[in-house]
Length: 271
Length: 121
Image (tube, rainbow over all chains, first blue to last red; front, side):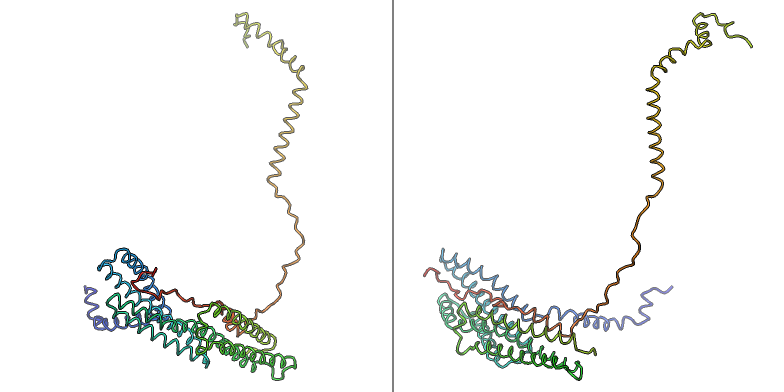
């Protein structure tokens, strides 16, 4: 009686097995890889997690060093400080990248956003450079000079982060506005060929309302001038003053789309 | 047929047999019966009523209670209503999901002053 091993050997399955294994591995990696691929958000979360890990350690060692200023304690604290700076600036760079990714994700081709995105990119570069430069710190004096220089340069870049957050909000509003207009354009062919006068008036109202919303978004973008109002980002009111405007535009957009859906419900012909 | 008294010589037994024959033995019971006849009749009536109750209950338990229902008027027919789903609902949802709170995302707190100098200076 022929054993199963012999049957398998005769069938030549051992020859195709490596190919089969390679194919399986390829399919498996194709399925799993997108799941583990780092996104801008996960990268930022990881880097910020690193900072949160190193910062308390640095604070603890610094307190210990100030209480007992020995050479050993100084070296330990210096090392912890370097690690903290490194993780801090990488976290900031990742946050800037995350914001850029959010803006890019909206696919809103809106001209006033370009300076904000460019500034975010420049700030990201700055943080990356600072993280690298921090590793050249050797002595306590080096660290002091590094931090002094950092404190002079960093406010501008930290402000750009705030502008980036508003930029993302603007980009989202622009995207919603574009989608709404496209919706109206796609609804027109679905309406009866001869439109009643009331319906024509309602469509015209929608077009006029869209222009009003556009103007409000433009005004919000215009007031977000990096060159002129950079220092304004330090004020508490920088965000709070814009919350109401965002809410107002959102309400208008919601009302607009509700009116469009009402027209669709009552007049549009199914395709 | 031989007479029982011919062979019984015990005077007490003979007296008992004679009492049985004459009915004198039952006389006290008859007196008691007459004395308590109304009690016995009442007890009998009460027992009869109780029995009647048990029998009636047993019969009632076997028969199913009649159910009185309103006349069948049929089920209410739901009004034919087609739920309208707009082709533009995703846009509406995106607008609803748009958060107006700022800053969003929240800016994490970072310490920009990292050095080995005392904080009190």
